[in-house]
Amino acid sequence: MGTHRVSNFAHGPLTHLPLNKRADERLTMLDANMSRRDALIGGATAIASTAIAPMTMAQGTSDSKQEFQLRLTVASCMYGYVGIDEVLGELKKCGAQSVDLWPKVHGNQREQVDEMGIDRFQELLAKHKTRVDVISAYRFSIFELRQEIEFAQSISCPMLVTTAKGPRELTGPALRQAIAEFIEKLKPHLEVAAQHGVTLLIENHSGSMIDSIDAIRYLVDALPNDTVRFALAPAHLPQEASLLGDLVREIGGRLGFFYAWQYGKGFREKMQREDELLQMPGLGPLDFRPMIRSLREIRYDGLVEVMMHPTPRGVPIMPTTAEVTYQINQSHEYLRKLVS
Image (cartoon, rainbow, N blue to C red; front, side):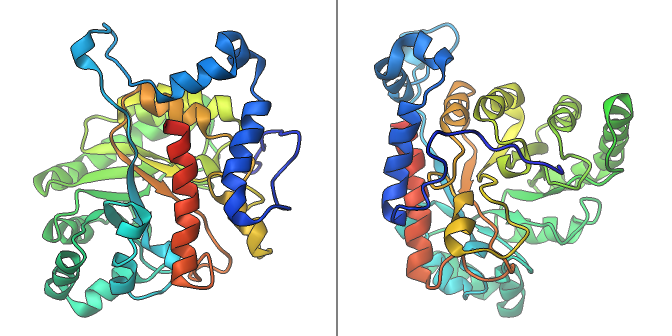
């Protein structure tokens, strides 16, 4: 999308605070600035209790309660071009169950696996007691994924994420028709994915056919089966917390991946690291609470990935591996506090 509307908070981004204090301060500010609608539901105390209450099925039966938890994965590109062995060693420190394997230009860990071979990579996964749950396959067209699907199967990775392919800047019926044609063209490729036990994830990416709220709605309505699901990247959408929360609820069971990522001050130009980090949950101005509530309501059990893009691409988000892990953990803690 061409413009990004950022939610209005009375104090603005917390750029004057040390990074390790911002998540807590952001939560305090969000509580102080709750909307009138939330206040009418029952005030801050009621909202806090709702945030930690287990979800129940629609019937409300006592034996159907399910505790909502975040299933965390880590994008290898957050560490820049650091060796994959080193990245895998950080996952448990981040409280993550798996890695999202990124290729150039954002990272190069996918290429590293090609260089070392699958057998050596499998040894590294076993060494670190972890796995690959998703591969970011943006370097390929969604219609050219067969080789990557086969690679994913070879390392027992269940998902690939990429973007839709089709005409851009359409609206209304023309956009709906273009998406319907895209899905029809995609069906043979979904058969290949199903044969290999791989799910394809389509992200809303600015400048792609799926770059607006309406496009997401049309796409979700058109998805034919669970071999293809939607990956939500809030950073590419209007930065309106309630709108994004409603969108998560609307997508419902078609949601297969959630990027915990906001626009902040943007990610297209070089800026001070403190400003770049405003893309991270808990540091920038976006209130993730409505989205977390909606994830709970739809009983989302897919992966959650903290994301940001540094400039230039390919550099780590912080100078050292330890600092990258620390920063990811700050956002993980912010998200956990919204849950519990």
